[in-house]
Length: 444
Image 1 (spheres, one colour):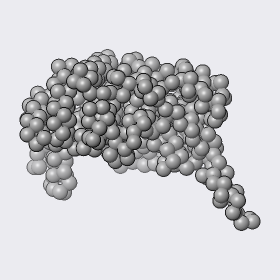
Image 2 (cartoon, rainbow, N blue to C red; image 1 turned 120 degrees about the horizontal axis):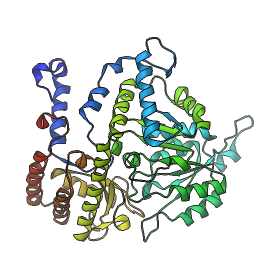
Image 3 (tube, rainbow, N blue to C red; image 1 turned 135 degrees about the horizontal axis):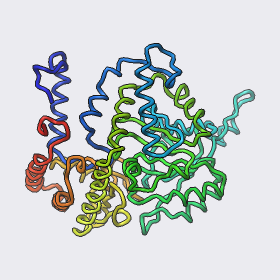
Image 4 (tube, helix red, strand yellow; image 1 turned 180 degrees about the horizontal axis):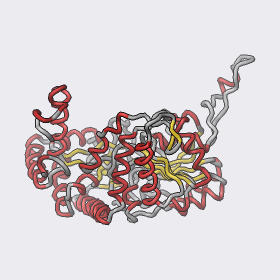
């Protein structure tokens, strides 16, 4: 990071500058194991903070509602073409501000929303009052079993607009049982079947879900926000050939700026575009679209596949090392970049919130997470979600993962011992010094 003398933020707003300095120090001196986070390249970071932030560009390339958009058209078309090339999709909309909005675009384009259906209210309604009607049906993975808020959780707009039925994972194996998904699909007859998750450590059987969707006449959406980088690199099966819609964030394993991407079959292109703008958003964030274009360009290079393989190798090594120390992982391991540590075995009185705090004080950043059949509250949880994308970006490999597994084990098994935390914190600082952040002053 630049010094105070040559940085305009430092000169104009020292308070904000100090937060920047503190955050870079925090990232440099901690082990980032939150599965949804990563470290972008210097090029992506610069694009995200570029002059493109100054420009309104409502509309789409060649059809804008503002003048002076020729460079906006150029960079957005680059992002579109590169996304289509990475994933092999017919159509890509790069404007969603987040993965949630990428999903909302599908819901708005393809589903009939309704207000929440309450039979008691219907019976008591007065003459002339509008009839409240239920929306279309969604079948999706339960949030506590690894799903996402935007897949129909009742507190989210997706759960307020539509009726929702959830499938889950098997209690014994921790894996999705397609026979159970088929049974539920035949029972609830969804208009949309949603696959993909924010905390599922195994390979998705897209073709199996496609068969179920076809059988019950449902559209199929794959939310690959967590595994998009693996899919782009060819290290996880690609859902594009068998799904009507595929959505993703552009950060996480894809290692781009924070944002969303909605892909679809050609027949849905117009409706998806209309759903994003003007349906959900006004002016697109062109500085982030420029950063998406840069990130998609990086993801098309051979070294990106090498990076994604490191992500997988690191996750496997970390999982195996934790298992060898007696810890329990949901589904007994991982096929991708993340794992779920189940604290109920061996540490039933330790919550995810407690373990997250202890590890954080040692410099190991994870997040508490609900696990299947969890009886604790969402702010407590019985599990931790752990992922390797950020550490793989820093260049850490299998040997480092084994050391980190040992650190995690010592902190958790000591139940937050101050002496153990201080000892591990010293080891974390030594390890971080060996692997500087990309683009940081310490890596130059």
